[in-house]
Image 1 (cartoon, rainbow, N blue to C red):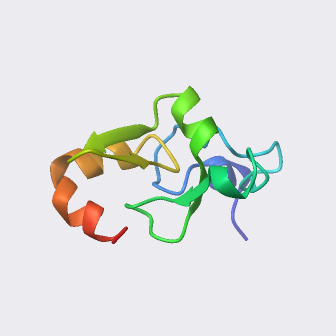
Image 2 (cartoon, rainbow, N blue to C red):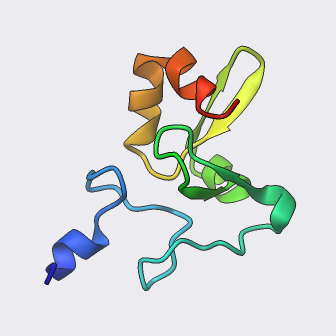
Length: 90
C-alpha cells in the first residue's frame, strides 16, 4: 500500500502538486466545463482544465498553439522536445 507522501505527489513524480486536483488528490474534471478540458501532451491521457493550468502558468506556446500541462514537471519535459510532445496532440 502506498504511503500518504507518494499519494500526494504529482503525476510527474515531482514535489509540485496538480493545481486542478481536489483535496482528495483526484483530478478536478469539472474545471470550467467541457470546452475547458484538454489533455496533457506529456502525460498523454491526463485531463487538464485549461483555465486552472493557465492560472498557475502550466502551459507553453509552440508554433502558434497553446499546450496545457497536468503538473509542474511537464513544462520542462515539453521544453526539451516540444515537437515530439506537440505531435501527441495531433
